[in-house]
Amino acid sequence: MFKLQIATTSQLKAEVYKIRYRVYCQDLRLKDPDEFPDQMEMDQYDQHSTHLILKYQEQYIGCVRIIHSQPNNLLPFEKLCHSDNISNLKENGSIAEISRLAVTDKFRNGNSSKYENFPLAPLNLYLGVLVVAHTTGLEKLCTIMESRLHRQLQYIGFCFHQIGNTVFYANKQRAPFYIRTEEAFQNLKSEYKPLLEKIQLEICT
Image: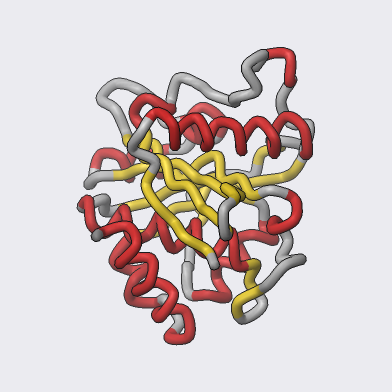
């Protein structure tokens, strides 16, 4: 029922931005809708990001992006969370940021279906990020998240490590975390590996 793909065309990217507008501007009210008169939430990081989009039957219902680190430019979470640990990570191997994960309200909290107690739509997106990172040689992934999400990800085997202090962002207390791609692959619980393999086939073929 779910199908995940990389948004490589302008049409698919437009669908990504529409989902983000619906979630961040209309549903969660984290961004001002008036800033996006075309109803597509976009920013300067999109041009050097890999975008994933999730489809349920014939409807696009979720997305996430992987922001690739650029020379002499800060990743978004670096601007929020200043830490020597973050700088050290960037200096020692390739790194990218998981950002703008958005799922429409019906699928956001698992009201439709769950996989081993984890909402299925976000799970597909996180596993998709892992597949992209692994196949493109990204060594580390970082993100900023709240403690509840951190616990959910630990449950499936994604043991993110906190690398900075908690900050107040998007109406909640959140902290910066990172995980090594190979570590995530190795620690993913066995019950999630069939779904990971399915996503690998969707993305890589």
